[in-house]
Image (cartoon, rainbow, N blue to C red):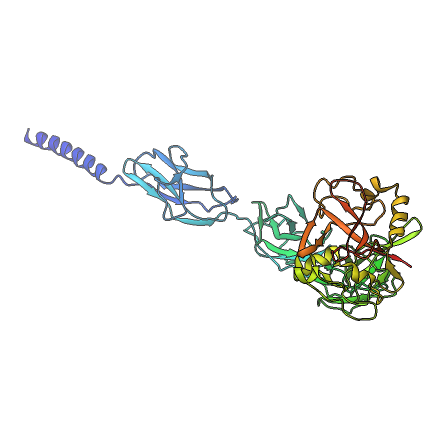
Length: 513
């Protein structure tokens, strides 16, 4: 009986011991990580193989990955279900050109186990740099690029792209320079002269298109030149010149001025040649015709062509007085009149005409004198000088050779030709209100006489009426103390005849002998 009981107890104890042993030997799974394949810029394929389930059922398996450290199931992962065996997983939403670590994982009731860590790098866009731009002309240039890396995928297209805007893309103008890793050069064509462009090299693979740095350049151009004002005008000459603002990026091979009676002279007309380079220059125009309107332009030439400054109009003089003051002339009827009032300060023989500024002294004169309005010489440059009648009547002659101060009879002839006193003033006056006070009634200047409102000087140094009227002496005396004159004013179209004391001050207009 005891032997039966002991045998029964042994069976029970053996069963209990075996059960306890099985509980203590349950292990985590054993597995390996598959190599990564089918790598793109944003995805890859990996997987794993369950070598042992550790004695417990596999409840989850897959791969996990990270770009910052050893991946765990707390990172991005796949879930490929339960059970043992091999499995494959797709890693998605990856970043191109990035190194990742991936591990297969498996879970049973004992815990989570991982396979060996495998590293891989997603494909990236190429790495490309832009070469400096060279051989720049007014319409073309040469650029290019160097490919430092294909990003792990074959280069399928490369070239340069350009635009007037920063950071051009292949949506802009571009070249196509084949495929592969080789360096390349390209011609940028169809460019606009004197224009700033941005250029970038580009390279394309299966991941996408990448660009080199933005390189800026400016196409060359014709020179930029301005025309200097015309000075030193005489009957047959004048001086102008040019300022070279820039050479357009190419050496100046020729420069000068050109002139013509047409508004836009070119180098096919009269011209000077003033050397090369960017120095500013002066030139003299010679052999001009008297009393003629000309147009002058500066020009400059480089490899890309000829450019011109703005046209400047000027007119040669028809007569010059003893001091070199020039005057234009106009024919009205049968008479030839100066277009400007006299400015001379010397008689024809070279003797000076006294400049008397003090009022009492001026009023007591019985000999020739002149003055500037308000004793300001700047007025005389515009309106001419003021003279007493004694200067007009002096036998040393105030007028230039070949000319004389108009007589009362000659003024009468002029006024009659223009239709009489009531309308002649308007036909003689400069138009507008640049010099004349408004309303400058009836002014047409259809004669070209261009009368300006220079005012006058009365007794006791009284200057008056600048901008309002102008008076001129005639060469005709009225009596021992007075002489005849003419004047026009801003408020009517009349040309008035008058007689005034010889000590008064008026302007002088000359007529050709």
